Image (cartoon, rainbow, N blue to C red; front, top):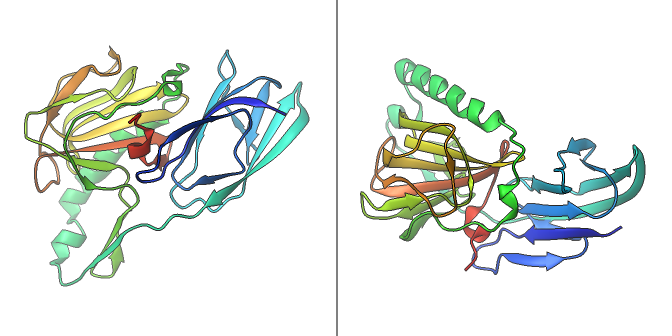
Length: 266
């Protein structure tokens, strides 16, 4: 069984895009696979149906901690015609331990926690959307220029309490520098002041693929607006929980985040 398939490997400083006529035998944790069926009419990933576009494009992610193997089943008229197994290559992530911090820096108080919960509901609602467009099938671009100050997958352990792994890429840049859309899409979230992420934008690229931009000084788009790749959407800032001007840029497939750095054509 053959596929027309674009495989995007997520791996630091390795050329990120290669083309193949078949599904890969293995892929790194944090990867994204974009493909197009040339036979069959439906696809399952580990027993769950994958969304297929009218022109038979599909996409799925390999999570940061996915152990695999991942099983891909191709069907036609509900009959299995091919099964493919993808092994997952484990990555090593940076772990930073910091002890002796004041409690309030590790665990928020009740008032702050309520705000965080409310903010999370807003973000979750945007992440749940599953639009039919296939903008995800074109290449991504870096949303602003700067110095990489934080990488995907790294994790801090504060006072022996593991915190959530870093879900994107941090780009240190001058305050007020323009941020552009990494790809074509629809604005599904545009908030000026979330507790953790400050000025925040989410763009939907279709089939569960979304990009998120955080800590913005200004949010210059509105929910429902269509943007093209490279279109200005806001300015670099240090809003929310931030220690200096930078852009946090993340890319996700529903709840699975991938490493955005190697989605970029270099």
